[in-house]
Length: 245
Image 1 (cartoon, rainbow, N blue to C red):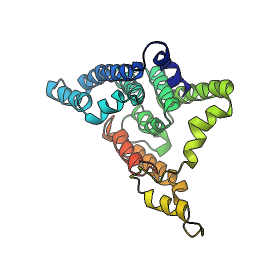
Image 2 (cartoon, helix red, strand yellow; image 1 turned 90 degrees about the vertical axis):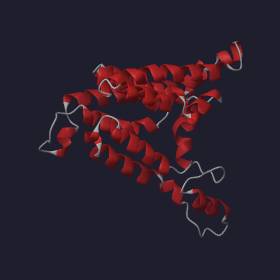
Image 3 (cartoon, rainbow, N blue to C red; image 1 turned 180 degrees about the horizontal axis):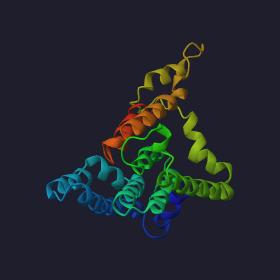
């Protein structure tokens, strides 16, 4: 997203460490939001709240990613904010705006939209499966999320044209990376790129099919297990079946 470039302009104006300090600070802001959410769902158990915060704040992956200058903390903060707005404040439009912005920033949070919308549905079993999704809360949440995503995409496409579309969306659909890649598609991709005879097909181009099939199934079937179980399983499935890892 060009928004990432905008917030990193002080790297030029102020100091080259601005981005690292900003993203590390957003890690702390995300911890405050996570604490508010945990206090709502931990049943007033301070131990659960502390453990949850420690798993975030002292996770070497989390603070290493931020201190090296990667902006994942922005996406995490938006997703935590979406959960907080949806489950604690019950402010559906705000939650939709935050998720729409997160999807614009990085595409993958779109998978969380299904279980989040299902969590807004009527309690108990529905007569028809589609009734779990097509209700006032789910429709409002989906419409706001989609509207924010489309509006931001259209704005930056108007400003930057194909360069934005290429960098934000199109490049990832055809990216092949045989190096520094621990994906299950690593070896087939390496064979495809090195083979001159055309014997080995490019199976990595179909990676999105099992990814989204798994994410849809997990989001639909596990949504009733709690507000975070399905998104967690979706995230694991998405990473495990990604063509670049």
